[in-house]
Image (cartoon, rainbow, N blue to C red; front, side):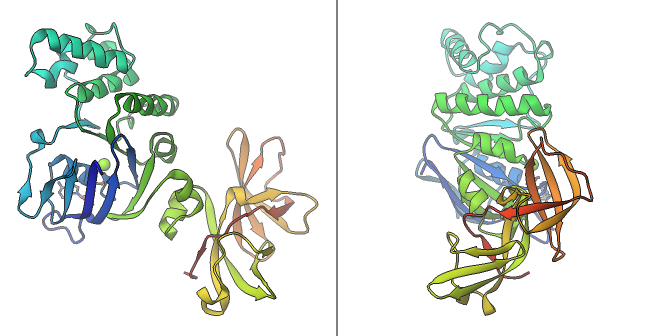
Length: 354
Ligand code: ADP
Ligand code: MG
C-alpha cells in the first residue's frame, strides 16, 4: 500500500467526540481514493492528519511503507512529499501562472524549473498560459493551475480537499473527469475529499463514506450503491427508503414478502433465521421499482421532481409505506394519481428493523 491508515483517531481539545474515530484504509500506488460524507464528518481533519498538519490521538499512518505518524513518530509535513490542493489554498494573486506553479521548485536550477512548469501545464491542459495572472483565468483554469502547482514537485501523494466547491455544477462535472484523467496520466496516488456523490463516482477508484468521524465503508462505487454496509451508507449514497419485509422458507425456496408483493429467491438473500421471525427491513432504491400499468400493485403519487431524463416520484402504497421511483420523463403523471408499479429488484439489502 502506498498510503496505509490503521486505527487513526484525531481529537481536538475540549471536543466531546473524536473528529476522526478509528479510521483504517489503504490506497495502492496510482489509486484514487475519495472520502465523502456530510459537512463536519471529519474529512478535512483526516486529510490534514495525512499531510502531517494534525497530530494523531491513536493509530498510525504509513506512506510508501514508512510510518510518518504514529506513537513517537511525526514526520514534518514538508518531508512527506505530499501535494495539497485545498479549498482555502488559493493561488498567489501577484504571481503569474508560471511563478505560481514553480512555487515548490525553488531547489531546482531556473532552466529545470521552467521545463517542469511547461511539462505540468501541458499535463493540465494550460500550455501557453504561463504569463497570465490568476484574475485573468476562469475558476476552472485556476483550479487546474492549483493542481499543476501541487504536481510540479512530483509528490508521492496528492491530497485534494473539495477543490471544486466554489465552481458551478456543470463545470464541476467536467472538471471531475478531467482531474481524474490528469491524476491518472501523472500516475500519482491521490486522496480526494468531496461531499458530492456524482463527483465521488466520477473521480474515485475507491470511495470511503464517513459519518461522525467514522469510516462506514471503503469500497468501489458499485459496491457502495448496491451493497451498502450500513444504513447510513444506504441513505447517503443514492435515493432509497427502508420498508418492512419478511423472509421465509417456502419448500426449497426463500421468499421475501415485501409491500410490493413477494420476491422469489432474490440474490444475496439472508436465511430467515438471520432475523427474529424473518422480520427485517429491506432497502428499496428508486431504480428497484418500475412503472407498469398492468401491475396489480398500485401506488399514489405524493410528490414528483423532474430530473430531465426521468421523474423521481415519491409514491404511497396502499399499505401506507412511502417509496421512491424513477420513471422515464415521457410518462408525465400528476400528483394524486394512482399508477401501477412492479418490483424490479434483483438482489436484496437487508437490515434489522430500526
Ligand atoms: P468536514 O471536512 O468533513 O466538514 P472537519 O474535519 O472540518 O469536517 O471537522 C470535523 C469535526 O471537527 C467538526 O465537528 C469540526 O467542528 C471539528 N473541528 C475541525 N477543526 C477543528 C479545530 N481546529 N478545533 C476544534 N474542532 C475542530
Ligand atoms: Mg472540510
